Length: 167
Image 1 (cartoon, rainbow, N blue to C red):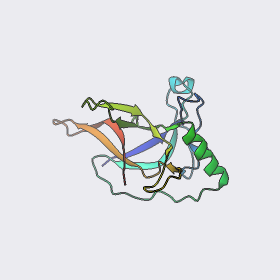
Image 2 (image 1 turned 90 degrees about the vertical axis):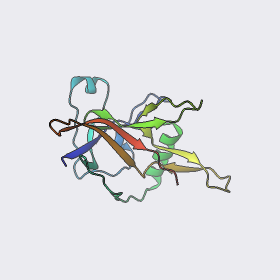
Image 3 (image 1 turned 60 degrees about the vertical axis):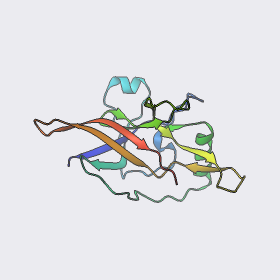
């Protein structure tokens, strides 16, 4: 299938309203970071659209793979903790569609809603422990939804979802 390149955008928080460049946090980086802003609106919104290490192939399931391994130093650890405390979200883009996370409805209704981006991480504790720890959202699984034209067999992307992984 055709290659699909995921782009990253700014880290955003409704708590602080202060955006950060995606690579402010010590995430896996491509060899060369390239700014990919495509239009004036993106620039005016303060978007910082850059390339990433994530690629897919159209219409092909892909197994899990390690894109890089990073040992966090004290400064990087502090930055991640601060962004988790301030409820920052990671924003990615595929074919001009933002990544979204399916939101579970608290009222138990079946209506489907999505949230833009996904959390940098969260605070929680291991079973049987009362000590609160920080967890980075670094095991990512994506679903790329597409529509196939039955006449031409061409496909176009209609959704980009980050799946919730438990366990």
